[in-house]
Amino acid sequence: MRKVRVAINGYGVIGKRIADAISLQEDMEVSGISDVLSDWRIQVAILKEYSIYAANTNALSEMKQNGINVHGLLENLIENSDIIIDCTPKIISAQNVPLYRAVGKKFIVQGGEKHELTGHSFNSETNYLSALNLDSTRVVSCNTTSILRVLGALKKSGFLKNARGTLLRRATDPWESHMSGIMNTLVPEQDIPSHQGPDAKSVDPDLDVITAAVKVPETLSHVHYWVVRLTKEISKEQILQALTTNSTRIALMNYTDGLVANNSIKEFLMDIGRDRGDMYEVALWQDMLKVVNDELFFAYIVDNQAIVIPENIDAIRSLCNTENNAIKSIQKTNNSLNISRDIFKFH
Image 1 (cartoon, helix red, strand yellow):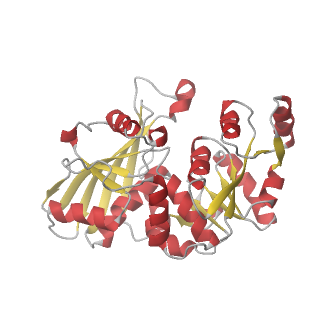
Image 2: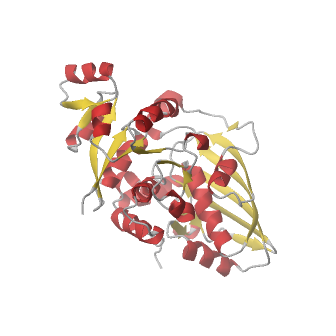
């Protein structure tokens, strides 16, 4: 079987993780990495033996001056690839799209872009089939991905009437904490709903969801608090069963196991050998979850650096139609990345 050749344009927080995830798949391979930088990030890509391409002529000159073996420009990488995953900053990403379209190559953009850029927004467990053979899609953001997994699982069991969520958002990516992190303050987003609720509806228009968001002074992950109106009075056990039956990417954990905050969860993941301490699953506290009449209350953690990685892998298969069965693609991705709903199961 010929492997799908995947170009990664932008080797930052998401790009480097997608590249490593692709390297674990049997049906795809990294054709090369394109970027504008010559610093430690590209040096790591070289250590991993990825082929390096320059995003433009200025970057090409700088890379050569730094002794980097450059295989060519972005245009050359695109020519030698079947599909491009654009992980560049959102302003740059939108500017790159005409280039991809001009040469007739499939491409995937990330959640910072608007839905209208591709006309399709992707979540593996929600609308995998609708992306089959499309020219492009947008993998929705980390928070939106979690919303679609969790609320989608409740919806599939017929339990979801509407949902109202508050998102405590990390201030910036950890590696940029010295540049743009906030300290000793909280910053509420001005608009309600915040963009995550409408974004989730771009994938599943039937979701009745409203979100509000607050930026907080930490960088490890996001925390979500949800109040869900149920369609009827349902037991806690039925809720937990719906979450684990309808999604393979929700992992239940217990506060009583000492997993009391995002830092302890991160430490646990590093202790068990997760690369970079990444968490691809939504980590939901089952002993905190409570049902009162027809209302459901719960909270969960979202790893903003990792949760969208499996979604990108599945999106590649869907667009390239190398797997037309969503469940099979999800299983392949889960197996390669060791994604498990039982990751926090100690008993």
